[in-house]
Amino acid sequence: LHDTVCHAGEELRLHYRNHLEAVYCIEGAGSIENLDDGKTHPLSPGAVYALDKNDRHILRPETRMRFVCVFNPPVTGAEVHDETGAYPASLPPDS
Image (cartoon, rainbow, N blue to C red; front, side):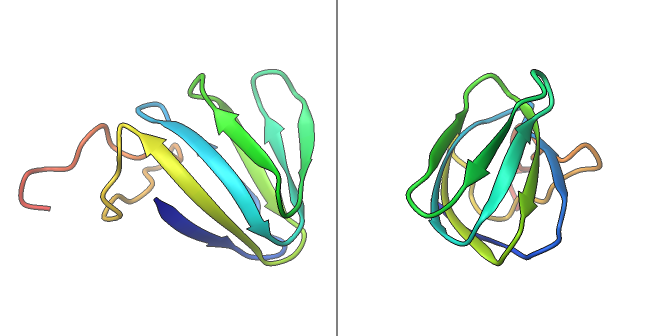
């Protein structure tokens, strides 16, 4: 599980090419735009979304937002987004 915090005014362009993600919003307000179909969805506490097709997306927090995120395959927490907004498929053994 990830406990993820995003800040008002950020525009986070992400694309998890190597992972599927399910997200539960527990704090704040904002939106997510699916770049593949152009649809934008509001986010507020209690909202759940799944990125089950390696969806390219933009997260736009209007206030401080907090999420609980689950990735498949699992991530360790040591991953860093690359230039495309993705996590690597796997970390080197000594990470």
